[in-house]
Amino acid sequence: MEKKVVYSGIQPSGSLTIGNYIGALRNFKDLQDDYLCLYCIADLHAITVHQEPKNLRKNTLDLIALYLAAGIDPEKSIIYIQSHVHEHTELAWALNTITGLGQLQRMTQFKSKSQKVKEVEAGLLNYPVLMAADILLYNTNFVPVGEDQRQHLEITRDIAERFNSRYSETFTIPEILPAKVGGRIMSLQDPMSKMSKSDSNKDGFILIIEDENETRKKLKKAVTDSLGKISYNDDQKGLKNLIDIYASFSGLSTDEIVCKYEGKGYGIFKEELAEVVTLGLRPIREKFKEIRDDKAYLEKVYKEGAEKASYIAAKTVRKVYKKMGFIPR
Ligand code: TYM
Image (cartoon, rainbow, N blue to C red; front, side, top):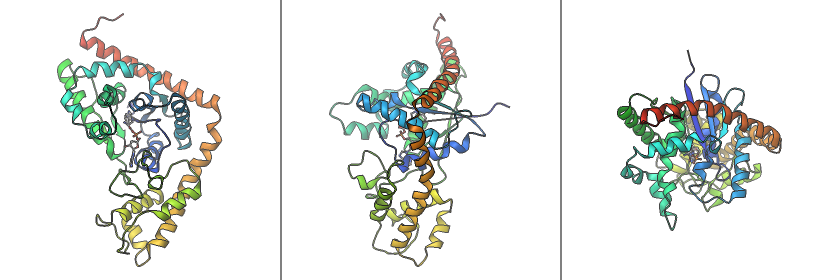
């Protein structure tokens, strides 16, 4: 039987946080033995917010090295750069013609991102259509992403169903594959908002690639509460978030963690949390350093990846064009 398909992507729009790691990246490698996995570097998505060209180039190579350092094996999975496979923009255009403007305007990420800019550009609005194209090109069954992407998955399913009912059965309807814990990691300084690299308070996030002492310092400063009691509930949002981080790096359940620290103070909990997090990130930090400067290797990975991805994507676009009534060349 053919393997089912897993697809995900990350934008090379800056350094990644442990939110990206826990919600998505760390889950990628475990899927490679059971599924055909495709992991893209979503550079076409990144430019929906202005990127300095030289930063975009650097961040793209960083992200390939990070995928490899996180254990994605290019012999098993397809790692590629989105802009190398032109079918993404072709399918996105076709899907734009069956996507409702109102639905795009109601997307929560569009609404929050458009509040932050002086002029809202069309790329930001059409962002979810490109993401739908990414996923639908490869007959994807499962999409491992954090909770903030759930709405994008829903619109992808809507677009696929609309195409299938208008032009006959074509696309597989994909499902979200949420992280077991930590689908939404919050800021260490403001547990009401998502951990994000664009946070102006640098103590709010931990980067996957940063100095261990930085990580320790930020965890020590993380906001908790004045109740002084280790428990996992919504009245103690800061602590709950830290327990999620602990759980995801240690493999312990949230209940086991609460039990382990019963009667102990936040100080000791945070100290041991810092130990668990830095130990957990050490292998990926070391591996990243080792491979980041091997440009020839990175190039080999993304070139071979693009070739394999293009082969599948071209077949889908040919089928879509034919169903829509385009005359083949
Ligand atoms: P991006 O680059 O914003 O984030 C990459 C992944 O990290 C997850 N994530 C989080 N998870 C938990 N807690 C957080 N604080 C947190 N912050 C980010 C995101 O949910 C995501 O899984 N549109 C996508 C990129 C993309 C894509 C795709 C994903 C492009 N095409 C096709 C899946 C399939 C994005 O902006 O992710």
